[in-house]
Image (tube, rainbow, N blue to C red; front, top):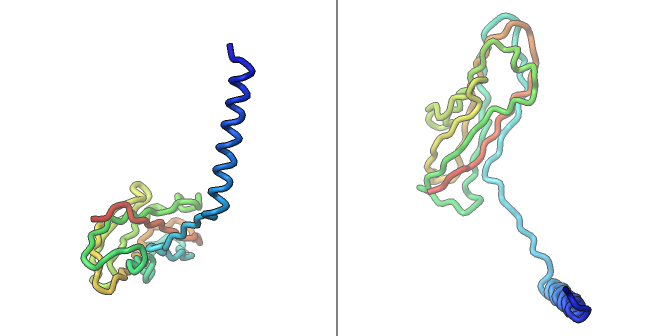
Length: 159
C-alpha cells in the first residue's frame, strides 16, 4: 500500500525534474540539425509510342555531390538505386529496362526492370567529388502512353 507521504514525495521529485529540464532547455536553447543532401535525382516525363520499341537516354538523371557530407576523394560508397513505380500504367508496358550508366565512362553500373526494380553499385569518390549518371530507358509498348519516370537513389554504405 502506498502512503500519502510516498505519493507526495513522487510528485515533488517529478516537479523538480520537470523544472530542471525546463531550466536546462532555456539555458541551452534548441538544437537544430541540418543535413546536406548528397544525392539528387531528376524526374522525367516520357511519352512511349504505340506498338513499338522505345529507347531514350536521360542525361544526368542522378548526381552524387560528394562535396557535401564529409566525403573525401578515394572513399568507396555503396549506392542503392530504385525504380519508383507510383504510376499504375507503367505495368501496361510489355517490357521495361533501365540502364544506369556512369556519365564519364559510359559503363553500365545498374540495371532495373519491372521484375527487379532495384540495384546497387559501388562508386569511388572522384577527385572532383561529383559523379553523374545517365539512364537509358528501353521499353516495348502496346499502346501510346505518357508516364512520369522516377528513380530513387541513396547512399547505403561507405568505406
